[in-house]
Length: 295
Image (spheres, rainbow, N blue to C red):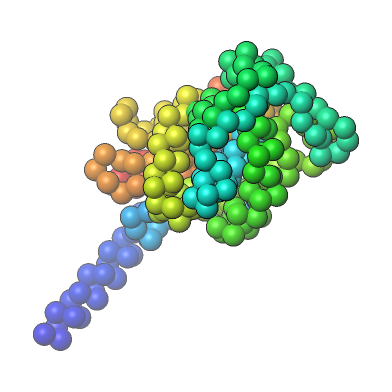
């Protein structure tokens, strides 16, 4: 039977070499597409959740996190719910003024928010689960700040780093203009976000039930101009976008191909002035990854 073991080793080595060659070819294709982009920087993180292959292209470049910082806030909320520190049905009062990280207070306005509907409820109570849904699916800045006030930005950062996103910065709420001008910003890398999504997808970010709930919320994302455009219609994509006009556009996702072989893909972009150009770049990279890993 010794020859069977030798044959198995040979086949394993051949498969590993083929996978390595495939990853190398895909990496070159991705780099060529990135090289044609007009942005100052692009960071990409790809990791299969079914195999050992991965591709990292400038995955440790630091970007303003924009709304992708809402991902660690969501994780902290579910971990607190797991620990009995809060209930998703707890009510929080909707308000628009929050302490600045620098000085005084700042007010969040609906003119700069992708979800204006919550402002009609100022002074009223909303359950945590509703605010959480708005924070992720509509990227509500107001809901985000209310939730950060409840769980603490520093706690969300510590949790994210403990999960392996060792360089992510979650310093403050959204639209704190004084802090922004002082350079005190939430920042991330493609690797940081990829590690967090992998922790959610594998049931390690919180309890398995909580992680399933997080994936379900991410799957209801209403802004789908990036990674979802690059995969076949009907493919499940659980993701969080983030953008600041002419500064950054990001998309971070767990992709579930119908035939199996799910994977994490994060694309961060900086310095692309036209939104459509940034969206097309992310969609193209998503398409290249999907086609490349399905072969």
